[in-house]
Length: 183
Image (cartoon, rainbow, N blue to C red; front, side, top):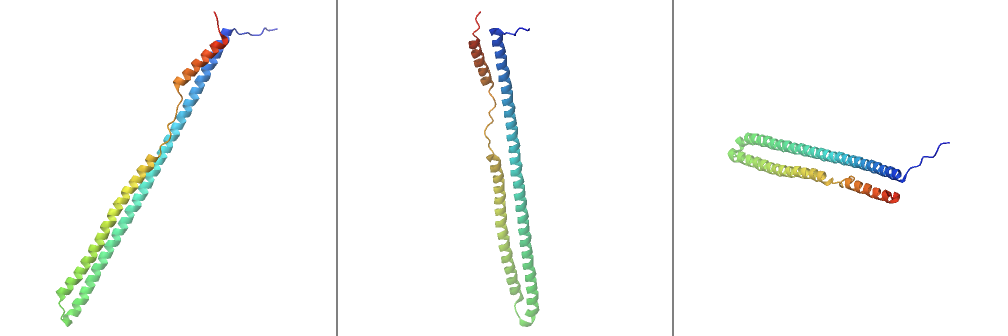
């Protein structure tokens, strides 16, 4: 028969220390990899948050730009219609004034004043709309910045090398005490 393998207490102590060192190293490595994975995930989420904020900013500013362009086109059309109405009224007044003896210069001046008042009012309203549009654009920029800044994940705690070494040291002292090697 074979004899059982026996281990001296010194050999058992060294085997226990080696097992502790391997376990500590593997645990440290796994915790470090987990922390790296978590950091990578947080970075991806941050990049997605930035992209979403920028997409919203581009969409909102594009919509605002389109809106103000449409408003300006509409205002220009209204001023053009006003000009056409003035010319039409002036032509009608000119034709009828020759037989009625009306002062055509005073009548033309009145038509032009009315058109000028209307156009001035339309221009003033467009100026206000442009200022509001600029404020809206600034607001969209602030919203994007706030959305980006609002993503603030908790810092990722990686493993502590000092803690791993201290744990290994405590395990070594415990193992040494357990086997109490005396020479």
